[in-house]
Amino acid sequence: MPLKAPFDALKAWLVDMDGVLYHGKRPMPAAAEFIQALQESRTPFIFLTNNATRTPAEYVQRLGEMGIRVDEDAIFTSALATARYVREHYPPPRRILVIGGNGIRAALQDEGYALVDRADDAELVVSAMDIEANYARCAEATLAIRGGAPWVQTNPDRTFPSEQGIVPGAGAIQAFLEAATDQTPVVIGKPQPGIFRQALAILGAQPEETVMLGDRLETDILGAHRAGLKTICVLTGIANRAQTEAYNPRPDWIIEDLRALLAKPKPFPD
Ligand SMILES: [Mg+2]
Image (tube, rainbow, N blue to C red; front, top):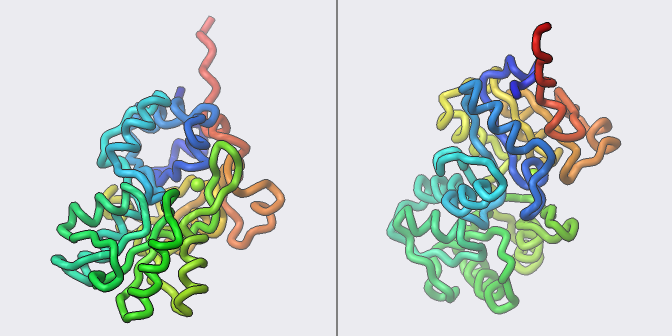
């Protein structure tokens, strides 16, 4: 089923995943059909997620289980963007203390960094959402930051849309460390412009002909607007209609769910 007007005229798509394509393991209505429509019309797209907990390979598998078949290079996470930033500003070899899951750990190791557990060994601290974060690890990160280690945060999302509801996100860990260190990190993910620039470069797309499809106003919509992209807010995730309509910048389009992007199948001619 093709995309419907005016969405079929957009030349390239950045697509958020959590709250847009799925909640947890539950796919959203028409998620697979929407991605298929992009693929069939050969419209360039990339999944742009602030979620740094998984590797591209893990995403490919998880999406595949929902009937969405893409290659690893269709996935761009704040973990990958963070690893690129760290490589540019603090070239390897260096020892990094990470609070975060597989996604950010693998991205940093792939760039040639050694991961350490103790503040005394750490030259840099990178923090992200970590479902196994504990007090001891946060204490080591605090000691390292207080000792002068630069601090980089993958993404600012304070909350995370899970199958159970809204739970603490990466920004909650950031807030914990800010309270403990009296410092603020360099933050990489949406709404920062760098991750949009990196994603557009991967697609070879210009901002004004590209759209960001997301569910969160202060990251997806604000960041894309600042980067000069068009924006679609879908109401299946974090933002509700009242918040979205009151938000400045207002998204270019507000849709209930992904079915609103698809054309109705054409009836057979008589
Ligand atoms: Mg989202």
